[in-house]
Length: 310
Length: 310
Image (cartoon, rainbow over all chains, first blue to last red; front, side):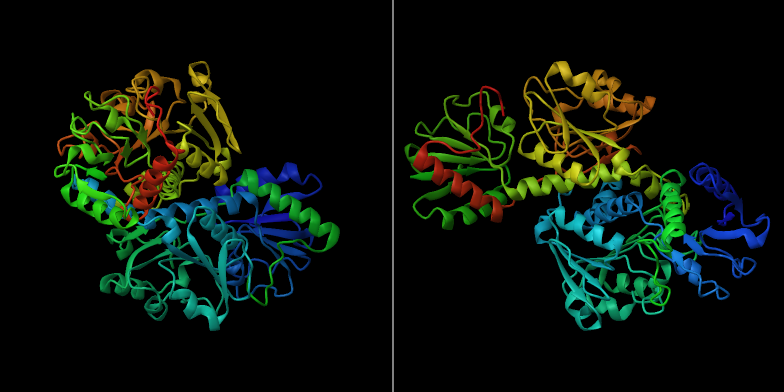
C-alpha cells in the first residue's frame, strides 16, 4: 500500500518522504507525481494540492492536511467529497502559534512600531503604556490554535476575550459565541487577533463593517488566512485612524507580490506566513501517528468536519 | 510632619505630590526644593536625587526610591548612610517588566529584526525557527523583577535558566548561583537577559569576557542599568559575530546622546528606558502603603539592604 505526498515545492516533498518513510516502514511513500499503481494509494499527505489531484486514486482512505486548516484541500472543486480529511495539529504547531500571537500582541501593546521608528530618527521618547492588565485583547477563533493563543495572552496578564461560532470555555478568558455576541465582543477589543478557519462564512469577515465596530484606534493581527481580510478596507481604516496598526502573516496571494501596498505601509507589519509552521522532523511523527491510528480505528482526534469546513 | 518629593522633572514632581497627598492625608507633601521646615521632613520620595539632597533633613526616617533599584540613591556620596531605603516594587512594575522581557525575548527568538529588514526590501523569506521549547534563555538577576520574568519565559515554553548571587528556586527554571556556576549558566544561554541590580560587583559585568562565554551568535537584552554594559565590548562582539543582536533599554548616559553609535547600529534595538515604569496613579498607592507601614512597624517588605547595595 502506498502513501503519496503532494506539496508545491518538490524539495519539500522529498524532505517529507524521507522523514515519513522510516516512521511508516510497512508503507511505500512516494511523490504524487510518481505514485506507482494508483489503486494502491491509500493516503495522500498534502499541502495546497492541485485541482483534481485525488481523482486517480479511487481507494483513497483519507487525505492528510499538513496544517490545522483544510481550506487549501477544500479549494479543489474536484475533491472526492466522501474522503475524510485529517488535520495535522501538534504541540509544535500550537507552540509556534502562541509565540507568534504573544510576540505581536505585546509588540502592538507596547507600541514597538513607533519606538522602532523613533530609533531610526535617533529620538528618545519614553512612551508609557498601561500594563497588560488594562489592555483588552480579543481572539477570533477558539480551536486548537486560537484557544491556546487566548490562554497564553491571559497568562501574560492581558484582559483576554475570545469569540467563536460555538461557545468555548477557556480559563481566564471571557468568551463570546455566534453572531448575536459579535458586536459586544468587537466593541471591547483594543487588539484583535484573527485565528478563524477559512470558510464561506468567514471569507472577507475582516472588512470595513467589522473595523467600524472596534474601538477607535484598535489594531489587528491576522494569522488566519489572507482571504479573511478585505485589503482595501484595511488600507481605508488605517487612513482614517479607525485602526492604528495591522500585522499580517497571511495574504490573498503568497508570496505577497512585490508591488502590493502593504509592503511599504508605515502602519502595516508584514511577516511571510511564518506564524506557525510544521517542520518535517516534528510534523512527520504526528502524521505517521495519525495514519496508524486511522488504519487501526477508522478515526483520529483531529478529523476535520468537511461539512462545517474546518 | 512632611514628606518631600525629589524628581529631576518638576512636572513629574508635581504629579507625584498630587497623587500622594490624598492617600496620606495626615502628611504635608512638598517638593524638595520648597520643603518648609527641614526639621519636619520625615520621608523623601526620590528618583535620581541630587548629591547632598538629604543633608538638610536631620530627622529623615527613610528614603523611598521610586523604583526597584537603589543605585540612583547610593550614587549620592553625601548620602546619610544610616537612613533606611525603601524600594518601590509592585504588581504594576513587575507586570510591565515581564511584558518587556517576553516581548524582546520572543522578538529575538523569532528573529523579528531580520523579518522587519526584509519587509523594507519587499523580500518574502520565510525563516523557520525552532519552537521555544528548543530555545535556551537565561536571566541574570532573580529578584522581584528577574524572578517574575524568568517564570513568564518558562510559561511561554522557553527552556529557561536563571543566575543570581545567591540560590533561588523558581518553578520551571534551572537556577545557578554565584561565581562558581556562572560559566555553566552562560555556556547554555542563546538569549541572555540582564536584570541585575547595579552594584560595584555588577558594574561592567556585560563585557568581552562574559560575551566570550556565551554560545557563538547569542543575543543580549539589557533591562538592568546602563553601567552593566561595556559599550565598546558590545560593538566588538556584534562585529565579530560572537553576538547576533542586542536590545538595550538602559544606557550610561540617558537620554542616549544623538551621536551614540547604538542608535544606527543594524543589530542593536534601542528602547528609551521604558521596560518598566512606575506611574503615579498605581505607584503612589504602593509608596503611601509603604510609608504607613514603616511608620507603624519600622520596616517594610521591600526594605533595601544598603550594605549589599540592592
